[in-house]
Image (cartoon, rainbow over all chains, first blue to last red):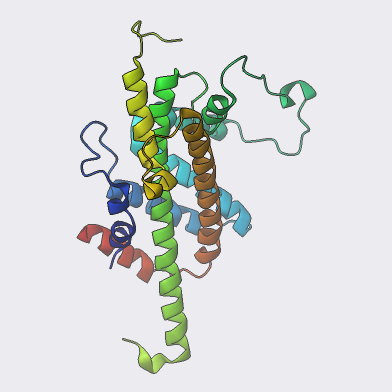
Length: 176
Length: 85
C-alpha cells in the first residue's frame, strides 16, 4: 500500500465534491507528493545541525511544494513564491534587534476585523478585493489540507517502516 | 483596487461563501444550511491557523523520523506506491 493509497483512503471522499477539477484544476496528488519527497530526501542528505533546523527546512519545503504545484494561477501561491524567493536572497537576521518603527505594523483603516484577520492568514490576502479573498481562501484551504494529508501519510508510513525494522532487528528469523 | 469595473452581485458573494463553507470540516459535519458571513470568516481563520499548526507539528515529526529512516527501503516503497497510483 503506497502513500497515495493512504491519502485516498483518508480523504478525498470527505471533501464531498465529485468533480473538483472542473473550474479550477488542482495539482495532482502525485505531482505534489513526488516534489515533496524529492525535497525531503535532499534535506535528509544535507548535513544539518539539529532536528529543529531540519524541521524548519521541512516546513519551508512544504510551503514551497504547495506553492510550486499550484503554480502562478493563484494569488496565494504567487505570494508564497515571492516570499520564498525574497527569503532565499536575504537570509533572516535573527541576532539583530529590529528598529522600533518596523515592529508596529501599519493597521489597515476600516474593514471588518474578521476580514482583516482572514487577509492576514491567506498569503497575498492584503491587497485583494473581498470576493477574490474568499475564492483564494477556499483554494488555499484545499491545498493546505492536501499537504497535511500527504505529510501525515509519510509520517505514518515511515513510523510503520521504522517499527517493522525494529521488530526484525530484535528477531531476525522473522523477516518476511 | 478593483480593476474589473463591474459590480459584484450578492449572488456571487453567496456562492463564494457557500463554497468556502463546504471546505470547512465543522460546517460539513453539522450540515448547516447557511451560516453568517462573519461566523464563516471566523471559522476559516481558525481552520487555516490550525492547518498551519498541523504542518508545523508534522514537520517536527518528519525531522525526528529522518534519523531513523533507512536510506534504501522507504524511498523505494514510496516511489513504488506513487507509480502504482
